[in-house]
Length: 413
Image (cartoon, rainbow, N blue to C red):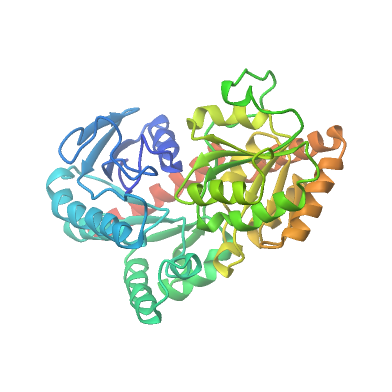
């Protein structure tokens, strides 16, 4: 098959769609990627990129077509809205001329915004190509949960756009079973919805022999709890900092934050205010390929989310990466993500936004013998292979793509 992938985010930005594209290439399919100029998460164009430079590239055999976009800047509301709208506008204007090959299927990757589907739906209408939509983020629920939009009138308008998009997709893939009710409500056809969770890149494996990491050399010894990923509003750093303050008397408990995001400055300031500079350590962003080595040094890996109904339905992508690396997990979140950690026997969980229970869980993991923590990691890896294995999920995806392509051929023949 020749597959057109539509995604606002793509390599060299770190998103799971990169690995999915490489997996399709490995299986012998031709792939073209319609995407934007990379600017996430820093908010400025990556080195070597501009509005009219590096707009045609190759990624592991996939053809990459880039359209202009307004960089997201610091991620403020107005700037982010212009960022989203500029991709829709430029993709709708340019894609019919720059993506004119005979595609068998359009695949949409949607971590946010849902409007990324609009250029794909235009191409569907123009060229009679079926559309498969991989939903990572529920709209309008996530807009309300993060506080990005508070107006009920605007949220109703967004819901109308969501309904318009879902009802024009031929198949909708959901990353969490808990998404089904919302998407059925908007799409109106439960038969077109299938569960397709995220996997993790093959680089995420248990590390047997640790490699030296310069970023860790200056850290004090002790019990290392590592958070990896976006430092954003959804990750509830307010409760994390309150928990670290509760445990400040345990001087050998250290919180290692690997990543970056628009709340980093606030978190760094809060660390100073609470007197946690000896306990909380910022290690910055590092390449995805380095993450398993970082994880291998952690006594426990940490995943947190705010207490919002939408986040209880969500499986944070880092959970698959943590499980794949066979490390014990501390999860301060509700719903689907916590259930997976518990079902896997891969760590300890507590409800979101409860620093008292969070501190109790951290102390319990801290006091758990190393051999038992290692067993949690083994359990997590086994659960990952059974439920989120990359090869297994890619095989399912290709099967659904073939079925959709054959159905469309039947309609158009």
